Amino acid sequence: MQTHAKSGIFKPKNILSLSIVHVDCDPTFFSQAVKHSTWRHAMAEESNAVLKNDTWELVPQTPSMNVVGC
Image (cartoon, rainbow, N blue to C red; front, side, top):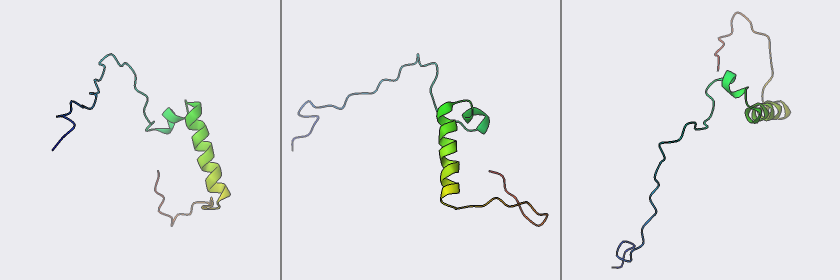
């Protein structure tokens, strides 16, 4: 049986550079996200979609409600 290895075909190795100083990643807090225009835009789009699709409505909190933050 002919395999890639026997044919001399190898997948290139990914070598990570240790000189990377900063890696962009998803923010984990609102305070981080609000600092970047891309995330502010994404949050606005999400809020507008929720309102447009009428998937929730804002109601006043009552003492009997068990409010869970997210």
